[in-house]
Length: 320
Ligand code: A3D
Image 1 (cartoon, rainbow, N blue to C red):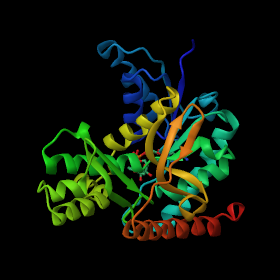
Image 2: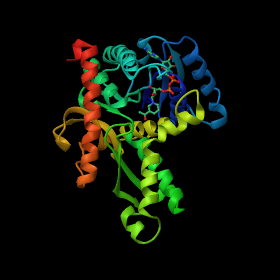
Image 3: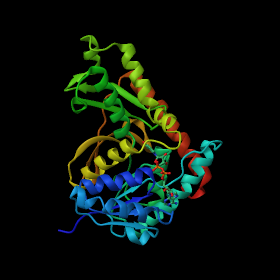
């Protein structure tokens, strides 16, 4: 059986980490693509040279031409620019929208059967635009944010309760950004919901509220520390979990930005919700019951995504 092929569109900090993880996990052969000449080739060679030590078999190739992603089973998109000092959110949106157009057309031409995972920010709007530009089926295009935001929440909860991260499950829904919705009723330690743990004296509502707030600004906290970039290890790991669920038909239930067609009262928008990822891509969208506060927060989050999509439509009339 031929190896699967994984194309990484964007070979920056997340792209390189994705390549390393995909190689170590032997998910398939890997193509690193970027417009920067030398970067994808250098990273591909460096990671390939770790193969003999790690003992993985994977072909790694760096590329500046979309032809090299031909026939990819999975494309993970991190291409774009980060927000620079003095740059408005709209300027960022405009630039990255142009990048999504080029990437979407490249994928449509060379890897139309791929499962596509978008990571480029602003996430919920970029994944929507990428899907529009590529024309791929909605169930084959998703955005990575919820797995990362939930992982951050799980990490903080595990620290708070002094238990293994393995036993902590958590849900963070909604758009990626300040308006994301960590849902504590569905967050558990080995099945015990967080509100019950508060009642049992494991923590207090105030401390959990602080953890929720820290989760919401989890990306910003890391940007503040790194100063020259944003998080890349945990974002890459999160996208690899999604890719693995597709490639191995694991049918994992993961919070991801998925295209909604009426679920949660939302139509034609990508928002973070629980989905099942298997060999067909998004195989199920799971509608969980939200309490009044969570629903209210979810709606605020949806409005923020709507605004961004409207801005995309006004920048590029082909999207309107
Ligand atoms: P970075 O290291 O700057 O890598 C981006 C790469 O994209 C660079 O190598 C660029 O050369 C390349 N690039 C730019 N334009 C194009 C193009 N047209 N075609 C192909 N490649 C291009 O960034 P990063 O890897 O740290 O982050 C990548 C993206 O992920 C950014 O938009 C971040 O904001 C975003 N991000 C999202 C999350 C989420 O949870 C959603 C978390 C962390 C980062």
